[in-house]
Amino acid sequence: MKSIENCETSANVLSRTESELKMMKQIIIIVFILLILGIPYIIYILISFITLSCPLLLIALLHFTDPLKRFLKKLFCRQTNLVGLRVIEID
Image (cartoon, rainbow, N blue to C red; front, side):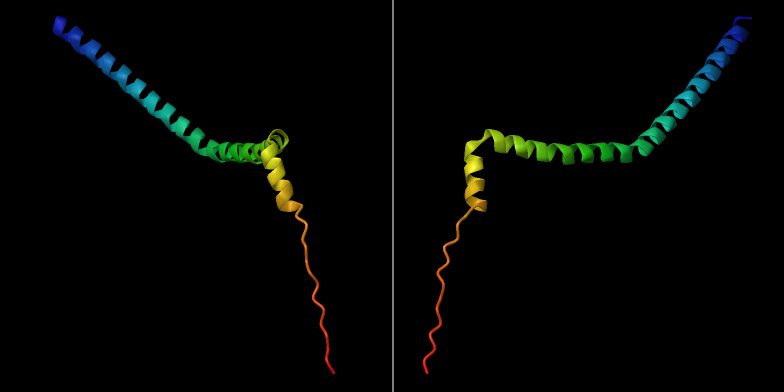
């Protein structure tokens, strides 16, 4: 009698573990599908965050750093001293 009871419980445990394993496979498949479908949205969010934060960061750097401000003023507001050449024609 005891051997039959042991076989029944092991069969129940085996069927339960098989169903749990099947459930875990389904959960893993769903997670992978959601990850694959969500990757383009994650990339879009990261790119939009980077493109929005870069100009704001540059403005903050220009506002708070005087050496950088002076360098850029020298770079872009250069006065060009051009000496004009005069062509003299000899007849």
